Image (cartoon, rainbow, N blue to C red; front, side, top):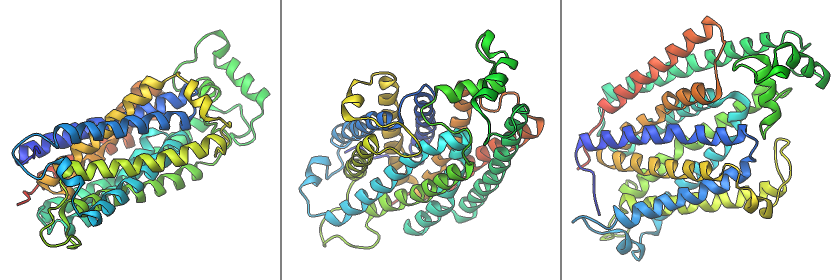
Amino acid sequence: MYMIESKGGAIACMLLALLFLGTWPAIMTLTERRGRLPQHTYLDYTLTNLLAAVIIALTLGEIGPSRPNFFTQLSQDNWQSVMFAMAGGIVLSLGNLATQYAWAYVGLSVTEVIAASITVVIGTTLNYFLDDRINRAEVLFPGVACFLIAVCFGSAVHKSNAADNKSKFQDFKSLETASSFEMETVSANNGLAKGKAKEGTAAFLIELEKQRAIKVFGKSTIIGLAITFFAGICFSLFSPAFNLATNDQWHTLEHGVPKLNVYTAFFYFSISAFVVALILNIRFLYWPILGLPRSSFKDYLNDWNGRGWSFLAGFLCGFGNGLQFMGGQAAGYAAADAVQALPLVSTFWGILLFGEYRRSSRKTYTFLISMLLMFIVAVAVLMASSGHRK
């Protein structure tokens, strides 16, 4: 198997993982905003997510002088480590599934900021102690503090942007009690009837509401925030579980049984994530949540609108997770949590693809820029804390 051994190689893996993991949520959001049911999107996504792990295992897990390789480990008595890897896959799958619904309620940027910050605060602390403190604490924890500051700015961005959007609906009595007639009136007043509405206007938001699969007008953002916090807790546990699977800090393996390599652990990790996603999303086809329309497995198979994008999202997430774990095994999983600064990437896509924060107030832009700067600092500091696993 091929192993990353240098600190520079580990940092390169982390940076590439940051790009991939920050991009796939934007692609998933794009399909939902175009009207594709999230159940359909997630079923496609989870197929290629598993395929990415298989590709990594059959290539990087088999080449190179290091042993044991991927196939050898499949027959070893290492079920204890396998259970840790699969537990990590389960919580990651639950977190990814939850964020797919949270994006609709509170937006891509805010969801990623809150979930990523919870992940870093809890997950990085756990990984630091699991890795026997190979990362420099005097550098690592100031980086964690930067994430905490970033989430405060993220909350301020959300509150300020919500106030901006509410002011755009000044002809509404309130978003919760707006009638269809009032929505049509505002659409006409904002030029929607004459052509495509401009991004950031009330007409644009109304048109988006008509197109998207998850309807959010009149619903409290508290629902989205609750889902986001649940996702953050799930995300904070998957990396420590994977750490335990590959390094056996609790000494659960029998004497003489080699520890799981990254590629074998990632394979089992992805298998469990796939099974959980498959079961839950097939259930959501027939018993949907959050007011989504009922579907069926036949409808899913026939739905090719956006399927290519969904497949791409799965590949990006799969390879992104694999790169994160490869970097973490070399430089410490606490340092690898720097990839949770993915709001740096997802916010860029949110602005470019979805018109987020268009025509917002100066106050909102100030908070947004401050948040992004804190994430940049956090990434630099966490990566600077990289150690070297012996």
